[in-house]
Image 1 (tube, rainbow, N blue to C red):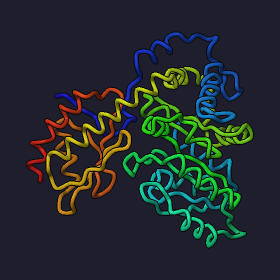
Image 2: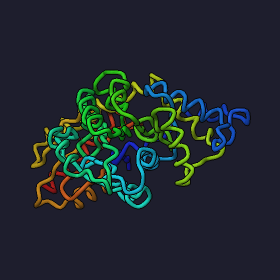
Image 3: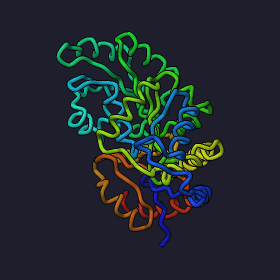
Length: 348
């Protein structure tokens, strides 16, 4: 049976060019990264910093670790940070922030990731205390649980002004930041120039098997490097896995994300045309979310589609997420829609 896996863009596999890059390595191209002596890792960090528009960058094992070392670098224990209420940091990484970084985590509401800045300012003024001073505001771009929504540069610019008004740092969870840039048809630096620090994943749309990067000032990255070691993220001959990232950050590979966005629109339109009692979001990027009415069992929908070879993911009791990515082409989306029609007809 043919399988179309739309659960996440973390299910991507490396490209032929990436495997070729890996096979080109020898002992002269790897070293001990904890000592800063792996030339392939160093090349990746330099390339990432240049593309993202920051002074320096740091290679880490995951997006969760990237956010954690960023927060550790901006704060001290018992400090407070503000995160959006549906952000990945709050929904999936809260224990890291509260138990490891020992931070107080407060949330702000938003309209698809865009906060009401007056309300946010009021929250900051009413929350700030000497015992637990606020040190950082976090944003997410694209926003996963808001269906891959793009947070525009003007929003980040205004958010930076709020942060500066209260002498706070602004950190961006940019796991899919290149999807945002491609969606806006603008350089990624138009989004990152307004933040103090940013992380992005190599292992999602960029199709690497592992790894994320944190970027910011040289001083910030110096702190982040120490915290990476502290949380067990120091790697030795990491150039072996970092080599995939050198291919991922090529311009033509980043531009490939456009195909994922086109496929997401094709999928969303196909679901809408089925005329079932579901609400389909209009995707900004590569994530499609559908809202299912209360009376239908979402677990059954996911299971029945899985039995038909269409793998998807329910993010809560009422919403299902589809993610397009490398390895899924237009024909696959058309096939998935064809397979979903009879299954959903029986369920609705």
